[in-house]
Each structure stands twice: as C-alpha cells, then as structure tokens.
Length: 190
Image (cartoon, rainbow, N blue to C red):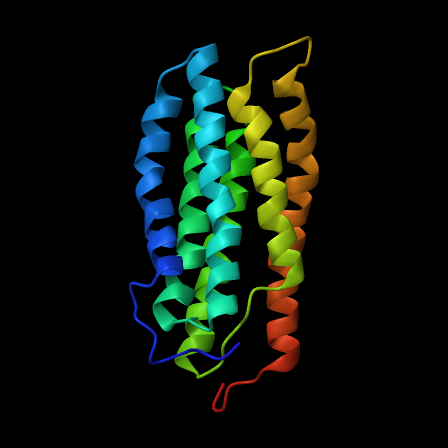
C-alpha cells in the first residue's frame, strides 16, 4: 500500500485511531469498577471502539488516504486498547498475569523489530497471521469483560476458553514475524 503524502494527517481514519487511543483511559475506569451492568457497558464500548479499527482501515484504503501517521496510529491504538483490557482484567482474576506478560512481550518484540527494520529502510507490513491474532484477542476479551453469567450463558468460561487459542496465535504470529524477517532481510555490516 502506497502512502499518500498529500493526504491530511488528521483525516477521518486517523481521527478514528486517535479516538481509539483516547478510549483506553475510559476503558481503564470502566474496568476498574466491578458490576454486571458496568461489565456489559465496558464490553459494548470495547466492541464498538474495536470496530472502528476495521472502519478506519477501510476508509483509508477506499479514499486513498493512507498516511505515515495512520500507519503509526492504527497499530498503536490496537495495542493500547487490547493491552489495557488485558492488564485491567488481571487484578479482577479474569486472566492469568503470566499469559498477559508474554502477550505484551510479544507486542514489544515485534514493535522493536519493526523499528529496527524501519531504521534500515525496510517496512514490515502486518501479516495475515498478525491480523488474525488481533481479531482473536478481541473475540476472547469481549466475553472476559462481560464476565458475569447472563441468560444461562457463562461468559467468563467462554472468554477463558477462547483465551488459550488466542494466546497460541499471539505467540505463533510473533515467531512468524521474526522468522520471516530474518529469512527475507539482511543488514549490511551485521
């Protein structure tokens, strides 16, 4: 995808990414306080905000307004929202801390790899596996945020069962980034 250098940095897709970033503190507050109603509200807010991830990418591609700022903001917003949700669920006992630590470690490692590659003039695009990882994390987080049983459905159990495949996909996609990078690229002088 080519970057449109003439596009305004504050176009609609980038504004949607900024809104997603600004919603992370709102999510912190909503998940800080427990209760059935607030958990459902937090899950709805999280779902709607995550849906803007698809919308901003769609609009940027459709309108030809992919910008360098957007390439930075979009993954930042995703990582911020998802890691915020995971971190806030640890003290509530809804996710294991070790699992969240490894997932965040993967995000930091891939981000570091992209920074090193960028410094060498290499752009590492998001892989299909990385996109599946993000979707799987969102899908497992929604029922984990709801947590409470409604209409005879144990949302916590559903989220917990979805967490393990999401964790495996997270680790697998991280390894895939590194394998593909070292297979396809070499740096002069290293």
